[in-house]
Image (cartoon, rainbow, N blue to C red; front, side):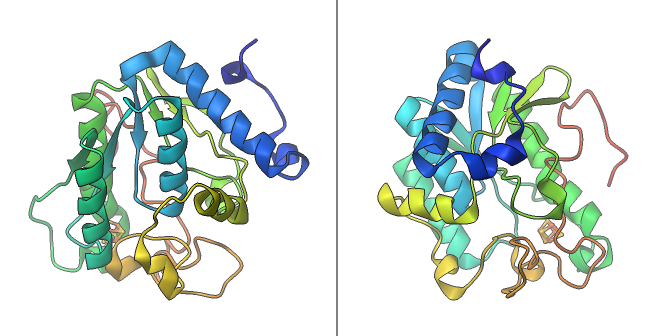
Length: 241
Ligand code: SF4
């Protein structure tokens, strides 16, 4: 049985495996999936620290692996600048953005709808246009309350595999990997952010939960934008929010 079919107790592995073992497991997962899906394996790069680690791991498996970035009109200027530098360095990264008109301050009124329009829809578009069969993410099960029940390999949408190769990494192990491999990160981390998103919905906090600074003051606080929870295949339409 390959690693892609593993039934391991992931919460146990979070503490049981050391840093080197986790890196090797992540590389093996990406390598096996790339062997299986080839060019239809694509990395979703949010430009956050976890995505940067996954992107670097994927590039070690094959420099040819493609990726996509979903950006929005509300991303901080530092993130936009960082994105431009990344795309210039890696032309195999495609950028998706929804410029459709939306109501003013939708992020305050109905943040779920705003995320659906600006994040979920362009992600669906990327998956469709790039002919993706397996998308690779930087999800980690220790990031916060909404991320504890994911698996390393999932098929939430029929016909679309999601690979979460650093699922069992701790926050400090991500930083360890980035430092040891000389991977550049978004300069906003130097200001104290631990999880990056759109400007109006991201705050610096000292809470234990890594995603506590996301959507502060709304029912979505510490939650999800929807790309990991909503259907992504365009033939399976969601409920519109
Ligand atoms: S993070 Fe905020 S601004 Fe960005 S898409 Fe979601 S609700 Fe809108």
